[in-house]
Image (cartoon, rainbow, N blue to C red; front, side, top):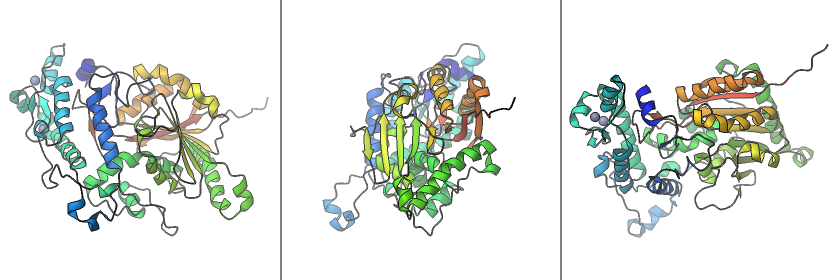
Length: 456
Ligand SMILES: [Zn+2]
Ligand SMILES: [Zn+2]
């Protein structure tokens, strides 16, 4: 791990394209579109294709129209998804292989040279026959890497098959999501399984489909799981007494929205729930309709989701800065740092406003300074803030820095823990396949301290 750090330096993962840059979450113009990397065009191409193709639901009448009129081109047979990357029928996968060979490292080379004190690696041109990734510089170094064969290889194989499946050309029915929840069915937030079942995601019929869907749904469902009255984050599961106060405030507003349905006076003066997403990148680029899954969880609440950050831009073909998704759901995009844009949104109210930061990387050395003024302003709002991390270490690094820089100014609302609604998919680093990331793997919450007035 240390050796790899020295090789590639600190950085952070790109949620979708599996690249790691040397800059942090809020640094302008980097992560999402990988603009600063020479490999940007390849990666951009992959992103655009994967996002666009994933969310174009197939009309049900397709079947009736008959096979002849369907222009579906199957590139990969669903029964044999595994292909060596360099021999893949999918162009993007072949490009990925080249990318790894150009920018990646051989784990055995790294291990051997690290022991001598100076890390060096040859290009990983040897493709593992079991996972299909170019993992090592030679068959000899591949055979010597026990760590690869014991654990990593199986995970890479799964990623290989998943990526081929997504781009196979088959109709991705699992991305056709259910609409509003039946009033008599209670949503169960104990796990992905029970959530998807109680929300009637009937098109998800395999673990693979569940992995695909979890990678995008992790954003709206994590928000919903925090806000919902049946949240899995309870006092017995890491919520602090201060956290309960904050959540009670927000749920009071949600309850008022419910009551407003039958109370005209309440309906007249109800204020929307404002969900701020700071340092937004991939989550801002998701198709707007995906956030309806949050709205369905709070069916009577008007919700404004505000994506703020230097990379907060909507989906590729969207030019608008405000998108009205439904009568109750509005998405807003503000391409700026929160601490610069704050006056567009002030004043803040802990009863209606909540903040999310998805894998912000607050603790990464190059991002820390960038996040500092934002966190300072966040604490002043006294609103609840929830943040996630890519894995245990990523989350704990952020938590450590928050404690060090702001410890005396903040209260913990939710103790750091694994998020039941993290993505089920593992993304691997192009530069180092041993490094992986899972979107929203862990979650924690905090808020600016409320100082009680003290008697003299
Ligand atoms: Zn080697
Ligand atoms: Zn392998």
